Length: 82
Image 1 (cartoon, rainbow, N blue to C red):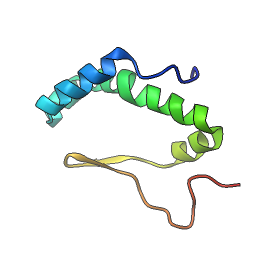
Image 2 (cartoon, one colour):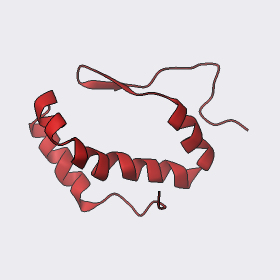
Image 3 (tube, rainbow, N blue to C red):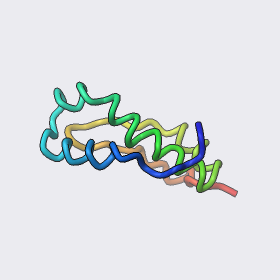
C-alpha cells in the first residue's frame, strides 16, 4: 500500500451518491467504488499516521448491522500500544 496521498476526487462523489441511495442493493453494486475511494485511502492514512495502528486495526473485524458499521470494543486492548 502506498503512502497517504489524500482522498481521491471520487470520494466526495461516492459519499454524495451514497447519501441519496443508502441501501444494501445500491451499496453492493458500488462496493468497488467504496473500497477504492474510501477504505483504501483511509487505510493508507492510518498507516501513515502510525504503522502500529494499521497492525492493530487489521486485527479488528468490522461488521455491518443495518445501516451502521460496528467496531468491536476491546477495553483491555488499546488501539495503540507502546
